[in-house]
Image: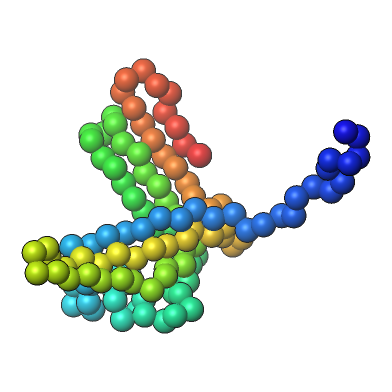
Length: 127
């Protein structure tokens, strides 16, 4: 075995978290509120980088049952891919947008912050 198996460590790569958002219709400028991206802003083929700074999240996802049972994900730097829309004769129109959360080297100094609370005897979590 010795040095024939691992001569050098693997190269460092960019860390990311990815996901997708699906909406029940295509979001146009009139459909969104403050600082939310809409269809025309997501159209550039190079992607749309969102990095608000000041430790403000670019995207927050809150899954809330009550004040004692929730989990929240805050992403601080995002890049969106081109949105995809679909329409069929039976179903309503949907719009899906893939995203990648990147590490924010600026004020947030993190990729994602996860806050969770559970009332079933598990410890509260904040990372």
